[in-house]
Image (tube, rainbow, N blue to C red; front, side, top):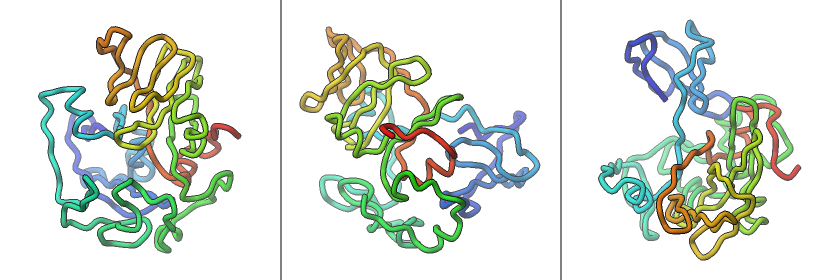
Length: 247
């Protein structure tokens, strides 16, 4: 998000929870902001947005370097896992176990699909959408006119990759083999399939290590729709009445 409002840099911190999600607060205007959409939710700047927000894509160091070999890599002290080992010492606020190292919510394979939300998060929830299980993992994708949720289980039922349509455009929905997380990418193809670690499209292009390549192996421009890898309750409460793929 862009922390500049009317040409002035604003300073943000976590103000607490709303709808089970963290809420941002800026010290200058004392406004509360949605951390997913960047929209002001309460305070003097309601109607404004910290945008347009960029995409927080799940990726690995290797994929980042494939995209830009000069990219600098910064690693915080937060607990993280690599090579089945745990690194870092700093704790964090967990939706499933209060303040700590979040072991119940995060593991070497990613977020725990069997996690249970802690009571203090539950107390902040609004009216929930019960079309999907509260803590289900999936990919939320949105445009100005469409809000759609792709449960991970549905993506896997399609072999881990398929092409859908959104606002008249073809969008590839797939499970990235390196990060083991879902992602969305606008494409020109009509169908896709997983082949080893690659995603092969029917127009001859390939997604490899997070990069879109043509049939000759040349890198192609990539355009991602707005997306977030999240639990169902977070997407549903941020985009009430949004679509659910497959139902």
